[in-house]
Length: 205
Image 1 (cartoon, rainbow, N blue to C red):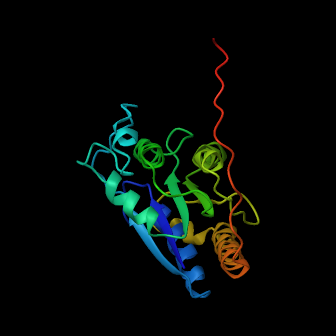
Image 2: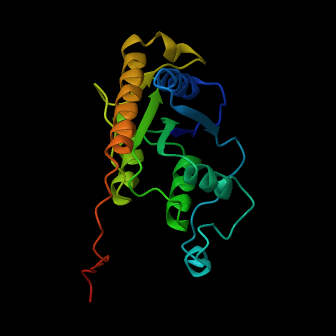
C-alpha cells in the first residue's frame, strides 16, 4: 500500500514538509510506503475548462508544460492521498488549488481512495484553508481520514512546526488512522458501492 503526500508549498523543506515528514515516518511504522511529492516553485496553470481532457478520454490534461500530468500519474499509482499547503491569506496556495482542480477534472483515479488535507500557518487562517483543501475530496467520493483535531501545524521559520507538539501528534494520529482505514479496506476486500449515473441539475432553465 502506498500513500502519496503532495507538498503544495513553494519551499521544499519548509514547515509543510515537516508536517508531511512526520506523517510519512508514522506510516512507515505500519509498513505503508510513502512518497512526498513536492510541486515545486514553477508556475502551475489553472484549469481553463476547455474540456479537451474529457474529449481525449486519456485521463491527462491537454497542457503538458507543468507538473499536472506527472502528478496525475503519481495519484493513479497510490492507494491514498494527502494534500498539504501553507496558508496564504487564509487560503491554500494558488498552485496547489490549480493542480488539484486539473488533476481531478482530467480524470485522476481517486474515487474510493482515502484522503486527507493538512495546512500549516504562522498564526491564523488554517481552518479555512483546511476546509478548502478537503472540499474536492467529498465531490470525488473519497473517504476522508480524520485525526484528533484538524490537521494543522504552526510555525513560521523552516522546521519550527516540529516544535508544535500537539500539531505533530495530530499528524501521527492522522497517519495511524490512514493506516487503519487502508488496511481495513484491503482486508475487507469489499467491492465499492455502485454509483448511480450522475444527474446534474441547474437551477436556471
